Image (tube, rainbow, N blue to C red; front, side):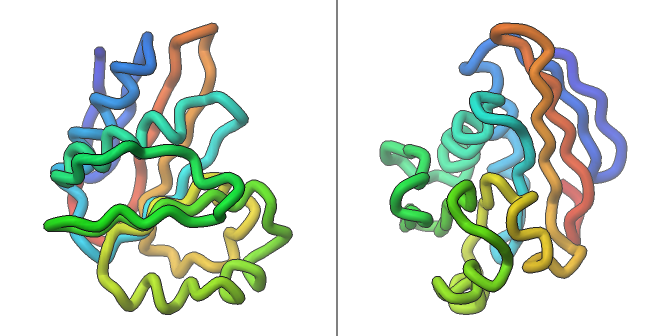
Length: 150
């Protein structure tokens, strides 16, 4: 899959769910604990596949599913991943109501799907991962920001 990389910014074009997971896996090997990953993109654009790859890259060996109905799934291991789905939330206040600050304090990686719904909860040092559908199975994934190189 072609990737363009500069600093902590990266653009990848993927042509399958497996390739999207591979990009997430590479990212997961590099991302420091305590990071927030804000995921943006329409329904079916690859956000959960990317997080599934992130988990694998972080050394987490378990089934990763979208937490749409549970709001957050915790994947615990040598490193911890907290996978949020904000699709059903109305704003950042609701994220704080479910214990956002507590999750940040646990120093795992917080991956937040549908981040556009809770953008007021971010402090500007998050990694922004944007998914754009280019076709039925192809995606453009753009990763920007963060507080360290990725």
